[in-house]
Image (tube, rainbow, N blue to C red; front, top):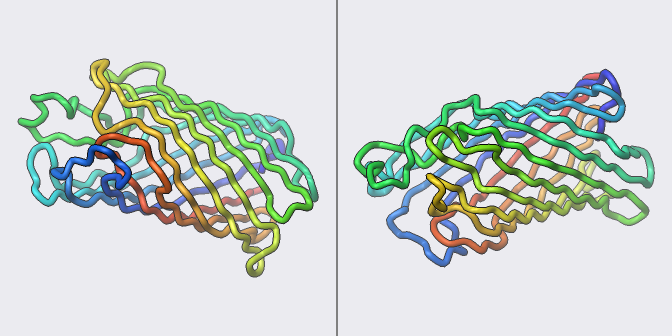
Length: 276
């Protein structure tokens, strides 16, 4: 939903996931045995600059915990916790018909700045095996943008249908020559118009992501890149006109990957409140 001029909205998503080497990989490395868990809190603040333009600030936080069955310098038990890179963006409201049959169409651009601690060493060099290092960092050490859009259509059909898309890219490598791979994401949404019970509606989602490998020193990073499809089922809650939320469960449907990319099994709770 778009905001009118002067309106504020706050929201967030709490997500917990268990990750493991992809069952779809054609090249699973058994020495990567262990467990990885993820907890994220994605907070945001949305403001209506005008009836057509909204500004957004995102403040993501993460806890990454992994345990290795046979720990060494390359695979070890560790926990990393903290705020990730801050993100700022604008969203243009093209159409926003909220009552009865109609459409919603938004276009946007976001930019994250390197505000969180990033990698201090290339984890794929031979030298990295001789010192303690991590394959996960809070920040990317680079400026990243995404172009995004969403379209929703409501009619007499029993389902509200939607499609969202995103293209993400980095502007430059980090100071140690790490560059995030480009990503393209398409998401198909369906929300049942008849409630399961008061103010709750079945919500299903199919996500397809195409991801180019990350680059370290201009070389493709192992265990990155591929094509991913995920399926989500949940409930969309419309508590009041200004308060809404989603409870969802997501799991991997299909992959085209090589290496030890991680598959998540996740649950998420999100909520949004329009202040005025």
